Image (tube, rainbow, N blue to C red; front, side):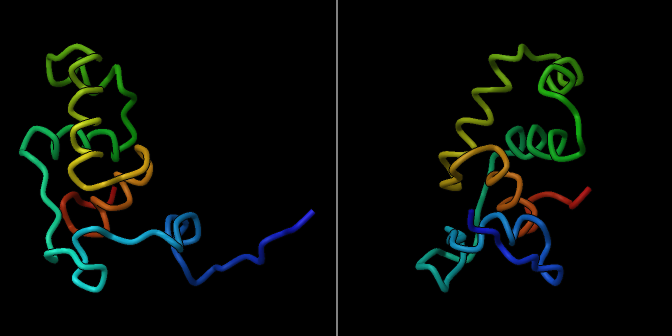
Length: 99
């Protein structure tokens, strides 16, 4: 079994996604800015703060399906592979505050 050496000098997301490009990063051919709509940003920020999907929906007065749609649209917009990657990109680009 192959074991990876720990990399304590990198945040956990950097260890998890060392090969991923940040779409808005000029070094990777992007414009230098990622963007989300205000509602997408709000949903992502609440999820990043540790709230469960159902809690985010209740807090915003939305259905869980609507919250899932906002997340799917946000993932597509920033070319994220999954929710964790979306949160990583949003934090790294300054779209949301690191909780």
